[in-house]
Amino acid sequence: MAKKKNTEEPAVRKPAGGLFTYAPAPESPAAAGDIAASHGHFIGGEFVDSSGSEALKTVNPATEQVLAEFAQGTAQDVDRAVAAARKAFADWSALPGSERAKYLFRIARIIQERSRELAVLESIDNGKPIRETRDVDLPLVAAHFFYYAGWADKLDYAGFGPNPKPLGVAGQVIPWNFPLLMLAWKIAPALATGNTVVLKPAETTPLTALRFAEICRQAGLPKGVVNIVTGDGRTGAALTAHPDVNKVAFTGSTPVGRAIAKQVAGTRKKLSLELGGKAANIVFDDAPIDQAVEGIVNGIFFNQGHVCCAGSRLLVQESVQDELLEALKRRMGTLRVGDPLDKNTDIGAINSAEQLARITALTEAGEAEGAERWSPACELPGSGFWFRPTVFTGVSQAHRIAQEEIFGPVLSVLTFRTPAEAVEKANNTPYGLSAGIWTEKGSRILWTANRLKAGVVWANTFNKFDPTSPFGGYKESGYGREGGRHGLEAYLDV
Image (tube, rainbow, N blue to C red; front, side, top):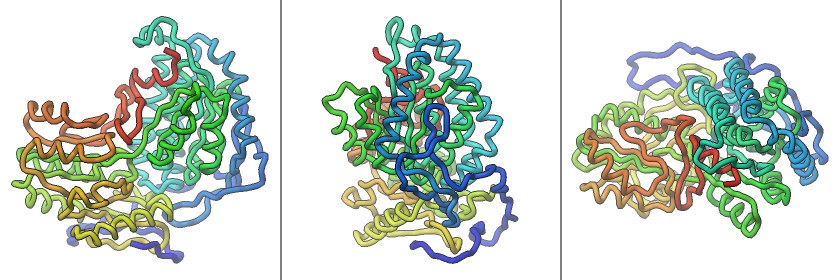
C-alpha cells in the first residue's frame, strides 16, 4: 500500500466482523519529555556540536511530522569520540569489576525509573506500538544492564581463562528496529568487561540513544566511557574504519555487514555481525493450532515485521494447511493497525518511506510471480507510513518473497509432507538466524532442531528473548553471539 499524504491523525483500525470495537486508549506523547529541536553528539561526557554543518531530520513515522534535527557526524567527530573513549579506557578498565558493576546497576535502575518516558519516545521515533516498547523493549533493556552488571566482577569464572582483558575501544553501529534494545545488547557487555564505547545509532531513530546519553550523565558514568555520534552510513563507515577502534559490533543488513567484514579484513579488529534472516516457522500436523497461530502472528507481525529473526516463512504440514490458514486469517482479521501510542494497537507504522517502498516492491514481485496475496479488511490512517498485515499462499522456494528478507509484516506460506522435507526447505536459504518448531512431540523437536541451520531455534513459541541466552546466526546472518555468557567473549581478549 503506497503512502498517502494528508493531515489526518493516525486512527485505530477496528477489528473485522463488527463483533466489538475498542475505544481509543492513547498514551500522551508528552510523557516522552521535551525533545530538543536540534541535537549534537555526546562526546567525552558532554553534548557537543558537530565539526560539520550538515544536519539530518528524524520524523514520526505515524504522522510524518519532523521530531528533531540531529548532526551528521563527520570523520573529525568520530576522531574526537574515539580519542575520548581511548582516554577514558585506562581508568575504566583499571576499575575493579565490582565498581564497574555499580555504574551498570545504576543505569539499569534509572532506565526502569524512566521507562515510560523512554517507551513513548521509542514509539514516536520508531513507529512501533507503545504496548511493545512498554512491555517488551524497556524491560529487556533494563534486564541486560542488570545481567551484565552481575558479570562484571566474575569474568575470571566466565570460562575464558584467568584474568581476561578488555579489548579497548568498541565501535558499535545499531539498527532502527530496536534502537534502545540493540544499544543495551552492545553497550552493557562492553562496559562490564572494561571496554569503552563509541556508538552510532540509526539515522531514522537517534532519539532514545541521545536520551541514553543523558542517563549516563545521571548515573555519573565517567566521561568518555560512552560516546554517541549520530549520522547516516557515512558516519558508521568512518567509525568502523577508524584505526584506533579495537572492536567492531554491527547489527543491520547483510550487504552492509559484508562491506564491514571486507573493511576490517587484515586488521587486528575483533568483529561481530548480526545480520538479516529469513526464519522458518515449522508447524507439524500434531501442533495445537490455536497456539501455533498465536506464535505465527507474534513471529511475523510483532514490530511490523521489522525483526531480523522474524518468522517470515511458514512451513505447514499439508494435512493441516487448510485448518491452519483458516484460523490464521481469522486471527489476522482481529489485528488493529494504527496509532502507535494507542495501547490497543497491534501493528504500528513502518519505520520510513524507504522501508515502505521496499516492502511494497517485494510484495508486488510476489504477486507478479504467481503467489496469492491476502490481507484483512483494513482502513489505514491517512498520513504516515503503513502496510497491511499480509499473507502469501502458493509460494515456491524460487519466489523472491521466499528467499529475500522483506523486513515487514509479510508472511510466505509453503507446505511439506515429511519432517525431512520440512528441514530441507527450512535450510534452503542463504540466512541462518532463527527458526521455530510447533509439535507436541519432544523427540520431533530435538530431531528437527539438530538438523536446522539456525543460531536460535524456538520450540512451541517464537521471539522469546532473555539476557542470559546467546543470540546470533550462521551463514549470511553473521557470526558472533550477543547475550548470555557468550556475549562477554566478543569484548574480551581471550
